[in-house]
Length: 112
Length: 112
Image (cartoon, rainbow over the protein chains, first blue to last red):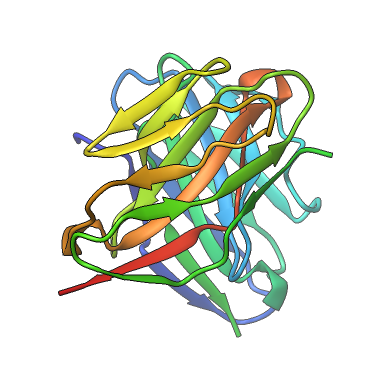
């Protein structure tokens, strides 16, 4: 597609369940970024991929969070044993030159 | 540590009014500075940027000047339109350029 695509757009889950969030980057973009936007807070960096490797995962808030990227394209962010504080909008962006021009519309996660 | 401080919103203006959204940052060195915009229901998109002191970024009638001495990057527009209603985020690159540090965002509402 023309832009960064994320799915699902909304996800409601029960505390303790696992969730998977998907990001389809712009075709040809080698770098992929995940951010989190919590209510009343700025965007928080989670993880950065260059190709399939993640040279910077310093923003992942706990070991319940993991992410992978396959084929240098699609990325999946997995949150295990979700907690209410995980409720946020999860945003993905991709880049070919390090400049983030566009983010996806995000996945709004609600943990009940 | 690294941080961005933006004026709190919402900012409500009448159409054709002058807009200023203040942004100051705390960072080591001289990072590249950015303004992003998030229109209702859409993902963030880069609005403008400045990469060195005294640079002026501009786009869609918006401007911001990189002020090293005051560590500021205030966003301005001479005459706002209803279509400018959105959330505006100030940001800069840290961590070797792999991660953006964002402000909390400022919501702008423009009324007829």
